[in-house]
Amino acid sequence: MKKCFLTMMIAALLILPLESVAVAKTPSATSPETSAQGEAYVPGDVPAQIGPAESMTPALHAMVMAMVNHGLSSYDPSNSQLGWETLYNMLSLYGQLDERSEYVGEDLLLPRETVQDYAAALPMAEVLGDLPDDLSDRMVYDSSSDSYRVICGNDSLAEIQVDQTTQADGAVHLAGRLVYVVDGSSLAQFQAVLQPTDSMFGYVIASMELL
Image (cartoon, rainbow, N blue to C red; front, side):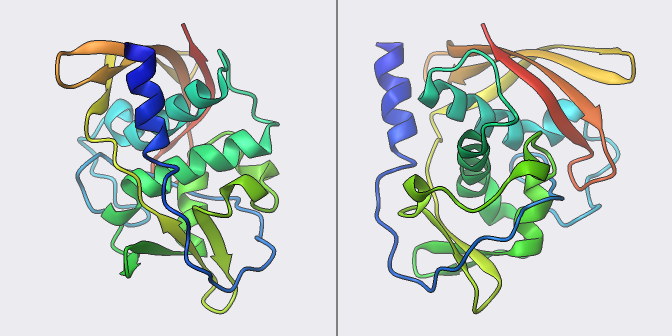
């Protein structure tokens, strides 16, 4: 039952086709960031009182969703398709909270700089190439505005819950779950390591494993 729900939840991000838009080769994304769920944010504007788990919730949520969708137990930074899907999940679920984004009809338009800020929270940021074809119905690069156009998903029935946070060797180690908010049950369990960076979110996910 939980697997069925999680599959349906992931599918909610993949439903609608994207209206035609000027598509060009995607420039490499190399320096993004994130913020706490429910807050508007701009680069360097993560409040000091927000901890790493709260700041990195969008990245953690997006990565767990992508890994479950691909049936993976550990995150492979060299998998650019997985990286782009993780980034799409981040933008789709949290991009509207960024003050630099705007809606065009029902789609979200995000400047390339904003997308780079988000990608900086993910370990594949430096190896991202062109957008994969299987994302073309959900996310495209518009060369005329140097922006990405994204179909927004809805994952209001699940949230990231961090159960344990420890620090060692300059890194933050997290243990947590993707939780079904209706009854509090776990849809997926994860362990992640965060490395501090000079970026909007303040950290990058160095590793992620699903248990």
